[in-house]
Length: 117
Figure (tube, rainbow, N blue to C red):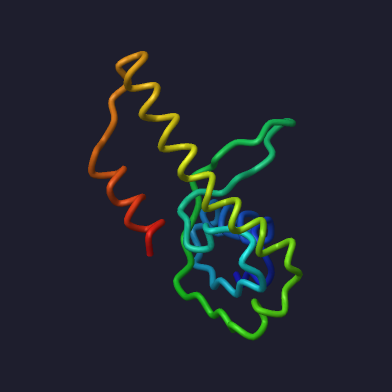
């Protein structure tokens, strides 16, 4: 399978590739999400958004000229996606403090490193 487009197209393709146990190739056309190589797909399931186990691509072909020409609102969406990682990490730390939920310092460190890069 080949996903050409932005986030939703990739999520649908990665989920179907996982279900059918076949590889897929990613061709992103906008910097609208940070999950082009993700192993999960954000899917609407019976009216609710749910993270589903999915397939990561075997190859990513990204042309920076195409991504640069994408609408600015899609790039802004991608920035928002990255900023959401900070919120998620803060939520995790707060839950750890309030409810004692396990928090993995290594995962937090990896996420902050990825965000810094």
